[in-house]
Image 1: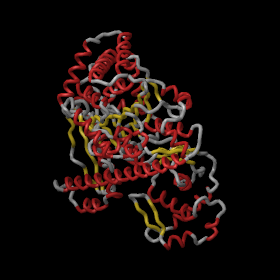
Image 2 (image 1 turned 90 degrees about the horizontal axis):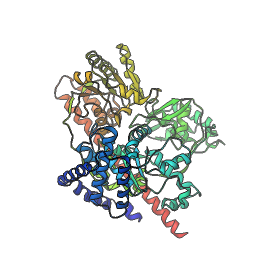
Image 3 (image 1 turned 30 degrees about the vertical axis):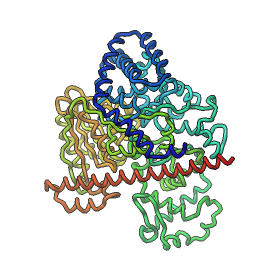
Image 4 (image 1 turned 90 degrees about the vertical axis):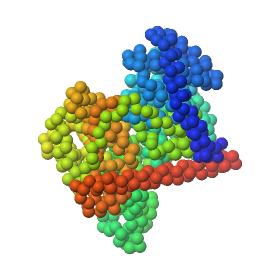
Length: 636
């Protein structure tokens, strides 16, 4: 079982088999035509009639699934959506739904209606009565989609539930009893781990419960059946670089709090390359011989009674925080606590901490109360967790470039869905500046010009600190704007809702990059639509594509521009040679910008490969640990 669970060849072969079917144009067109024909028999059917239809499909689903079952399920979804929203599903939405119902990834461009496309696979998978998990990157999207689609499912006699953050287990257990349960990825994962540590401790007990041997009455979740994942590349790939760890923690002061504070003082006296060597890519620090001698100059620290790790490790932790972790980029300080920022979305994690003393080092550096370290109770990689589902599928606008990893790790084929309406997006030439300060001025100037024309502008930043810098530049121009960066208390939905209005200016971190729908008013549409400004290229090209995709949706007009400076993080940390080339080049030379763009694309590709390697190593370590636990369990 373990060998086949790991074997990437088996999964890739499975993905290729699915791909051959879903990529057949005849199969897609036949399914769409059959579904529309079947839906005519259900037109204007009463709720009772639709519920009866679902009951018949539940009986049919217990037998071998068939094309007829898929067609009948699609017909019911078409009619329920028509009655609920007075709209007809587009062919591209049905196409995406059929792809996901076949346990594959639908790459559907932003604005094409992914939310409604997910109804068909969720409904189809729910017919077996084993529960379907609709998984989103965050709680906001889960609540939004559940509230919007609950009436659609209710007409079909299908119940829905929502997982709330920090909910009591009894509340979560009730949500899992629904036919379709919405929630953020981390909520499903941590509830799974809570089930693993129930009624026992230790690795052997955890391994047994991974095999679903825990009595159902004691579980929060039901056995994992089907998952439909929104923004699937973010959930299964971007977030898979670190495992899910269920920990216990206390806000009491750590016994070694004073040692962390002393380590900060020592770290500030040390010099890079002389006392330590820093690796910016890996965010690691190694002391030199001179560094060791300096750190242990006070020999009493080596035998301090409050040490929980060697003294020099306290110092290296303090150096790592000083060198690599930036306030309002990697973390924020709120209510005298360190709160971690999600690098890919800009959202602030309320209940996550760094491990190994790093969180305490950050607290000491910010002169906050140093709390006790978390104690790991259970852990699992995201890859292993999601592969326990009997079926998984999902959708995203940015699956391109991840096809091999989807296939080898999850057995998922990727199918691009054609655009319903050709895009009207205008990609304007990149703007290149030498410094960040010049960039902020240029962005503010462009924003002012567009604002005077009445066009809405969305400025997407990579970090909270950037959003503040942009805000300062806009204020200097006398412009009024909305700020969405995870720190302020403004309601996210209302900010996004106003972002497409005439003359609106919105400054946002990558919060606005995924899952948000910015609707234009009639005037802004006539004026040219939303203009998206990307303040710097992300280390992953997919993040840039998501942000640019906020504009020019569903055939609307729109434009976008990317800004580049020699001080950008991608260049500074991952490709410093580009900065030298940029500073030597003439921005007015028509050949200089394309050259820089090619270099940045190469840097992004290298980062994607590096991240894929990290995820592969993490998965291999997880496999080796599982194999060891299995052998030890068999000996008992």
